[in-house]
Image (cartoon, rainbow, N blue to C red; front, side, top):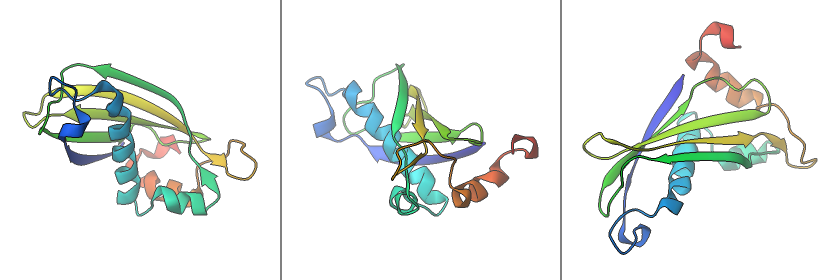
Amino acid sequence: MYSTETQIRIHYALTDQMGIFYHGHYAQFYEIGRGESIRVLGYTYKDIEAMGIIMPVVDIHSKFLRPARYDDLITVKTTLKELPIQHKIIFHSEIYNEADELLNVGDVTLYFMDAKTMKRCNMPEALKDKLQHYFPINNY
């Protein structure tokens, strides 16, 4: 399993009139967590795109447990529970407040696609090489 954590402060523009983090913004926090998770491996989305691969979101699920509020420092925990073996990668996100209370969980599925043909393809080997040692040997 591969997991990273990213901290984000809830600023005023992200809240509703009650000072509660607006539910529509959670997908952005999932994306920030994914981007930073990939960065920890030594890559960026820009690097992957330079390899001729794009990664569109094809499915997203979110469950709201507790509200995040203005000025909270939240932690986005981003996890790959399994090594992608074909064209699909699923990022699991958990969002916690400073009291370590679980606020939100989400799963985002992306496909690896050839940017020229727009057809699904396997995960780039360079990225797979970086991820392999986080998973038991029988997963790859």
